[in-house]
Length: 543
Image (cartoon, rainbow, N blue to C red; front, side):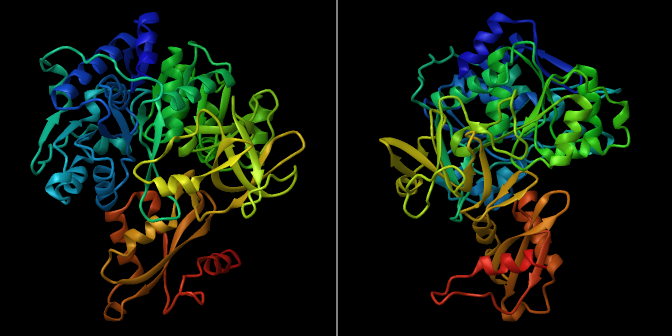
């Protein structure tokens, strides 16, 4: 994967690679910084195959650090910067990470998580960047950050302390005199490149082992599918710590030698100005972003005429919104579907023949089918079953979990198919449609929330005896998280619903936090003593 940056820097050394609040970094500059950082990582003890935690919002430092880790022959462990202490402990200890790279606003949380671990599992080094290491804090005009972001983006936060380890400032590292020579690039297609984590029906997130080959496939295939070239100007606003933003946005465009206009978070007015000013041609998003932009009172002032491609996934695009894009701008919204285990898209709609509210057709080199989840036999068109996928983008397995890996795959016609856990059907034209989920999962604005993980975190609250997480309808986000809670007897009347929500805010990523908490005396249970979550979910949907 490193070769993609190195090759583009040779082809287009002076071309804009990253644009961040008016600051432009050329391909040559990004390459030079990534090589310097790789040398520094080597000096800090990173060896081939080591896992390095990378927890940043979208910014140039994320791209530079990501490629530096790859250049050091190491493995990127992308971590959502919204995660909190209890979650972060697992992302440090499970991959045996000794080094983490993050931004100063969240560095104290990572340090606290490391400090809370046994000494042998703690971080040895924490590299910390300020957002203003990458742009001019006094910028004004159309490309300036929103005023509401000023405290978050412009403040230069003090660096935390790290028990038993060292904290390094990003700018000092890059300006320092790194010793020695760059390590030889040793990795090949079958070596581990990426270890993103995904949750599921069990409480703790699982690392998905992706090789250079599986990531490279979807990076190349995404470019081919959308007829992309080095002339692309892409709005990078979907998170690049997430598999879609990382592979189909960052890696695809770096391979092409295209320009990435980087936004650290969503803001509809900034997005409108950047699309207009930078003449953005490609925008991968989640549907709620499009809905929000179209609802802006300033929308008429924005010029979207440069857009050639708009699409995404994570949640269904409302048919009315898709139709407005098509009629007003001639832009079909290209929906796709994929999982962390499939390096992003395993299905997507053909740009010249899309169907609305549809997952699309299997991606390049991909074989996908619908099977009976009980008998594992393939079903004919029109019948609902579990979607299974075979292709070069499918992950190798779950990190340190051979049993979970074995359960995730089946053999069909001599091929190894990944069981997605999603229920769907395929029509007579070969297009796939989502019907329901076999596994419990809540989709909040495209962020996947796995109830078992949230429940496991909530059980750490001293007042909670039992908790069941279900989805509740949200007119904007689609779904939100609701917690049905049984309190311990000693805490009844002393702990409020808001107390529980506030505690969750301190202990888990914001998109996982229950927006509603309901206290009950008991949870419905089966004869075997299992909580009947589906009964609670059905009752919620029938309200």
